[in-house]
Length: 276
Image (cartoon, rainbow, N blue to C red; front, top):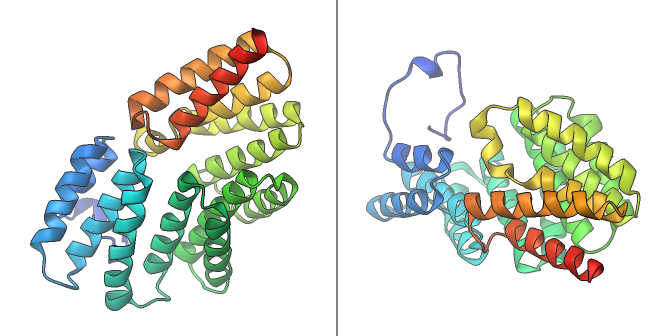
């Protein structure tokens, strides 16, 4: 997968290998620890300002984040950003995407205000660009902004941003999925739990329609948001069952340190505490 070129009609037929292919395949298979190790090995073996080294750093950062190692991910993104900026320039959509991905790791470190500022800046820059990459980047940055606003308890603002982003992104893809989940979180935060549950159910239908590879990063997310809505509706037994399912899925997919695994565990503790 060469992220430095645009995908074209003949991509499926191209067999040219790159040094980062193994790490990419491991990441897409959900083997995140192996992907991170393989990607870092490639990055160390490449010369300074090498495009394959930059690709490998990007994969290593993604894999670290997927394991819940957000501090490592941010540090690796910082390295990658230097190389991407030199090779492609600060305004290139891939450089901006790296900024957005890095910012979203900050939320797991409770650096929500920093995430908010960076995602808002990337979204504003992307909105001025043209082409499908910039449009998708704008939606991704807005998703990060929604998460940061929700994390700060600013749920009405988060709802507004999520609805605006969904209106601009009509494709039923993974981006729509995460935006709908962000919207459901915002509704839960406003105690509008039935609306949140309806959004989560719609997100669940979309999740199940996606290819398996695209579903991996969001394992347990629908169950977690749904469980929160059910708990708000005082449907405690259903909420606990779904929260337990979410915790099991997240721990199996990402490990116990991932923010979603932690959130599922904390929700289970709240549910059990309410029933004691």
